[in-house]
Length: 180
Ligand SMILES: Cc1cc2nc3c(=O)[nH]c(=O)nc-3n(C[C@H](O)[C@H](O)[C@H](O)COP(=O)(O)O)c2cc1C
Image: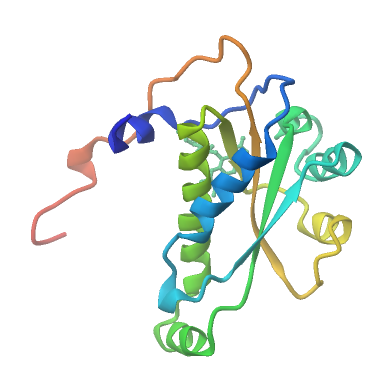
C-alpha cells in the first residue's frame, strides 16, 4: 500500500470482530505515535491502553450518551486514551505569545499516526472526541489536572466491514494558490 492508498483505507471502524488484538500490534501503533512530530519536540502526550475487559467496558460506557452516540465502543477489544501533557516551557511561552495551544495540534498528529499504523496492520480504529472526561479520569487514576485529548477504539473490523467511499469537500474549495 502506498501512502495515499493507506489514507484511503483508514476509516472510522465502528463494528469489530471478537478477535483479540495482539499486544505487539497495539505497541507498534504506539511506536508510530511516539515518533510523531510535535512543537519543539515536546511530545506532550501519554497513552493509556485499556484492554482489561471490565475496565474497558466502563471506559466505553463513558463515551456513550443515551445509547445513541458511541455505543459501538462497548465491542472494541482495545481502547487507547490519549492524555495531553503540558508541553515544554518554551512551547508554553510560545503558545501564550501566539495564542495557540500547540499541544492540541500535536495530539491530533499522534492520534492519526496510531490510526494509520493500525490500518496498515489490518486493524480498525475510531477516534472518539465525545466522552465523559471526568469519569475516564477517575476510572484510570489520571491526575485530575490533566486533560484527555482523544479516546481511540481499536480492533479487527467485523467480517464484511466494507471500505466506504470518502465523503470530503472538493479540492478546489479547499486549496488556492498565492491568495485566499
Ligand atoms: C477529533 C475527532 C473526534 C471524533 N469523535 C467521534 C466520536 O465521538 N464518535 C464517532 O463515532 N466518531 C468520531 N470521530 C470520527 C469522525 O466522525 C470521522 O473521522 C469522520 O466522519 C470521517 O470519517 P472516516 O474517519 O470514516 O474517514 C471523530 C473524529 C475526530 C478526528
